[in-house]
Length: 182
Image (cartoon, rainbow, N blue to C red; front, side, top):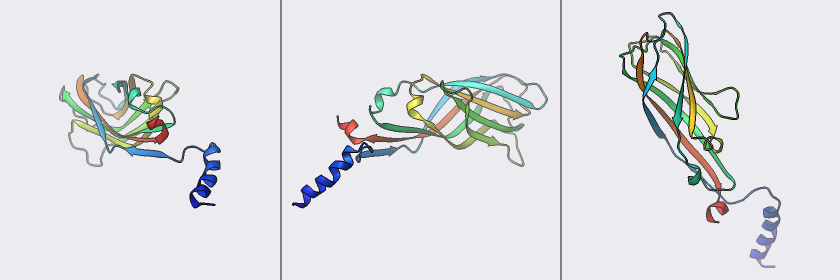
């Protein structure tokens, strides 16, 4: 029996077992950032407390960019940054902050990123929450907006202010090569 026929006879049962494709491609972006400008934040009372602000972050319609079929995709959120633009707030009183996302299929949000005030805080107009939140991108693309909730505790600005909100994430994708071709 010729070697190529042997290989075909050995691999044919593997392909027919339903264990999945043997041919796939993986791709990953390093980082994609999106900024939403002039997000409004309300004034807080002058005592320490906790406030929550929900931001609907547009993700657009990217359904057509992903191949149909057996595609796995993850959005890996790395950074959430709030930079004050108006109102001149001092954000050094913020002790902790977290960023969470709520998907339509969830009753409670999933925490993605965290911020903790440094030991020797200085006056600042920027808060950066970091981490490695991973989301199923196939579920995300069914929405127009990503509902992000920023929860902050500590002594917060006592007057209204606006900020630019920047979110940075990477995209990981694994697709069956046959779905890409056919």
